[in-house]
Length: 302
Ligand code: PSU
Ligand code: MN
Image: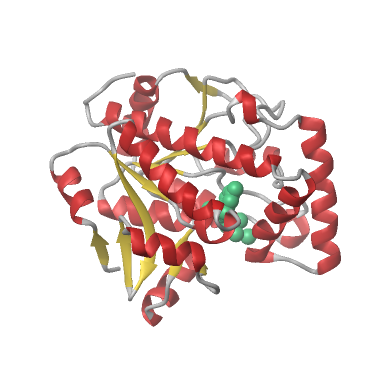
């Protein structure tokens, strides 16, 4: 795989300064225009403000870009037909030189190759509801298990089966560390009622766990709840998810298209409040990721 590392990212890595990889599927497929481009920029700003260098990961011209520039961010946000690139898509999209947005799975793999230890996202993919029939489990889980990266998220997307997702991560040997919480956060909702085995309250505490896990050649998940002011209530969110899932079933939406469909349906159903929550948690995760990266590189401690 050809990596094209932006000069700013390269010099940060060479000087062992903190770097945070940002996924780009959320820009191309997870958020509506124009919020998607505004958010892509805001996430880079959050990372910078916390003293780290952002590296948005995407695919173009047969290379994996580590640190997409402003023009590429705009293309990802505005163009139709940007490929959603998970592990199975990496080779074909690289081979044809297409424009691709990286999921957490693809971002984790590219980040690991570039020597970046921390990845920020909104919510990781996981085990879908009804997976016992559909077999729909995100490649994010495998990718985190086999790449030495610390993935900061607000838990798994609420549209998933969170308990099954946690079971799979356990099987794969991936610790899920609650950041300031004992429960798995549920994306728009601060808590799921599902207890976590591990917790950390500061970037330095996460960094100590991450050092051990990364040395095993494996990744971990840091799960931070959405900020209180923007969170949705659990009952409301559950009801809307059930409605969105039923709509997806009726429309015959499956596979890679399912997550974008559900997120759009939820946004419409909550008249934008789910969107506000999504942006708020993305920003918080980017900031926490930068603080963890700083703690890992032995710089600022938290
Ligand atoms: N969470 C969001 N929006 C998104 C995603 C997650 O709120 O767009 C993306 C992430 O890039 C994640 C991917 O890695 O969805 C998982 O997709 P799948 O279930 O098809 O593997
Ligand atoms: Mn899937």
